[in-house]
Length: 215
Length: 96
Image (cartoon, rainbow over all chains, first blue to last red; front, side, top):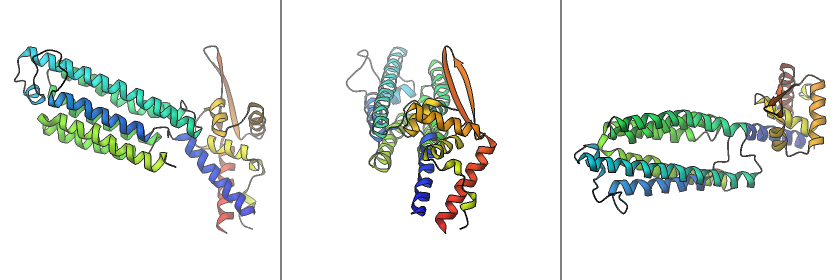
């Protein structure tokens, strides 16, 4: 009987230590959905289908090699920025809503100190990377934008993993590796971006869902 | 039995044990956070916190963020050592 009580005590200690230091409200489905959004958005840019700000449009490769007229390049950049912002905003909304549902289900407070720690460690690299990318655009170095987003996002994930799911570290290394490779194959940056933000998130979303959410 | 001598009576209560588990792995942590993590009501938690402060296992910091009062807690060295001993006592008893 005593032994059972001790075991219960130890498991209580472990659970509370874990619960109070890790941000575990990230939802697998939420991550998966952001991956799909990234793939969808990037396909619009890559294949240049459907929407276009004006009649004159060019492919991603033409943009990187800057073979189009200045007019079409500006249009393409506008389209890129709009789509990227849409992906980012809708992903954040989806992640927030799914995290809220998950935290409610598991009885964990969403805005606890681990949440702010995770956000901070993720967004310091991501935010500085975002500003860096805007400068890349303004200096006409379009080809490096996609690799740079991958690299800065990867760095953010590696540091965020300390206060959240440890597996985020591996996703971070994956994004970093893709970003560095993409810097070499500059013309295929968007393709690497789709693998990193699209496929990476979809696989990781499934992983989180089956390992943590489906309990 | 070996291990019993390491156990601390202060941690007989699961609330106090839980509270110390949280404090042992966090820096300053707020009342509200602790309350939510332990899933407790106000009166219940406050008395346990007071008891642990009385034996110097935790320290309390009261401050104001704007006009809102904020109470935070941190484990002391004494508390840390007592908790560590208690945990190793529990582990020894289980492994026996």
